[in-house]
Image (cartoon, rainbow, N blue to C red; front, side):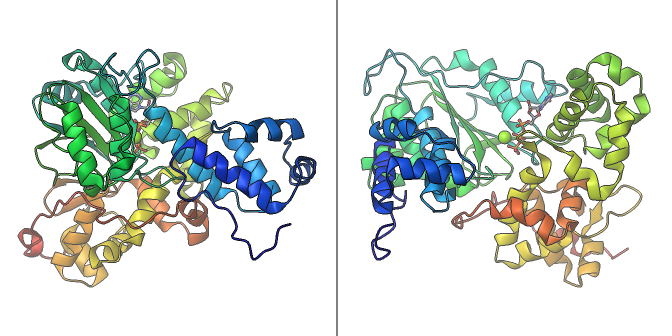
Length: 474
Ligand SMILES: Nc1ncnc2c1ncn2[C@@H]1O[C@H](COP(=O)(O)OP(=O)(O)OP(=O)(O)O)[C@@H](O)[C@H]1O
Ligand SMILES: [Mg+2]
């Protein structure tokens, strides 16, 4: 192994696949290990890196597969997490920004068409899709917000496809990684870089700051009609520089945060599906026959999933993998609150991991509203409607009503509660279960993500708390 005084190579600062590969080669040099040594060490840590693969991959400048990076760094005796994170990030940035094959970089040629495919059927969102179709193009910025797993991406992508022909100069799509469990949100400069490259305008890395990059983006968009879908926005601060982009272009954002402080924005809020639509979604996922035989169990299953599309999708996938099970078998498992989140996991779909990111962001907040909001999540729902009232929260937490209101509003702002009327809030059952889990159970999911603190985490919705202060505690 190399002299420990040598600086250990890290992937920090790699902005392109080439630069990443240079660092990976430096890492091998630093260890002083041969390909043969690395092969043997990889085998001893459960990997299977062949010498020939190591040699040929390290010779190239293309990003290697994720498993290769992890196995190699582990064989070098280091924590693979930072390298894996850097590789994933570069893959996102460069795949999204790949210019169309038949268009020379820098040329205004074939319009980019980057929208991912929309899910074939979306249940119960016709009204929202209709509103979105009217807004897109009429308003410069359209925001779809809602709790984790409500279907924001699915609905956004579908709406973008519906209006695509209004934007003949292209449809861009970038996942901003706002709540990706293993990643950090893209920075404004990174977003600008991806968009500029997608538009064939070169890379914005040379721009001094996000402001300059934004100016270049506006220039690139002038005289064009482009739809820009930015999925999974972390906060208003992440996208404020961009919106509105002006001209005939439009921006469609999806976010768990409300983002109402963005200039020129119009909003569509997605919540839980209505009960009949949640049943219909299960019917779609599972097949009508299986669902019709057990109407009561299906209704209960939908409620245990908070009627959220992601949870319904996971429950259905669990049942699809066990065709012999009656629906009630899963209901019985999920009826135990301690097991419910464990049951809502299949392959890479994981309700706990999805909630963990939002919870971790909230818990990181240093202000009083964030601290109280975490405590509010542990409060019991009030009969008969299962809501939390401002006045009751204030008295249970022993704080002034204004403070309780700000905490509850913060929960709405970050997508962890709904408010259908002033002073009344509903914390979804799965969110509450997550918040009540002992630290050890939520920590692994939370720890995976180590992000820089974002400047502001909320969308800026700050209704006056005074209106509710007069409500007497019940
Ligand atoms: N209305 C719907 N009908 C059927 N399936 C849906 C519907 N909405 C979403 N889905 C499916 O539910 C899953 C979760 O949806 P999606 O990823 O869009 O949620 P999200 O709100 O974007 O989640 P996140 O907060 O993590 O970004 C996906 O598999 C999606 O295809
Ligand atoms: Mg999403």
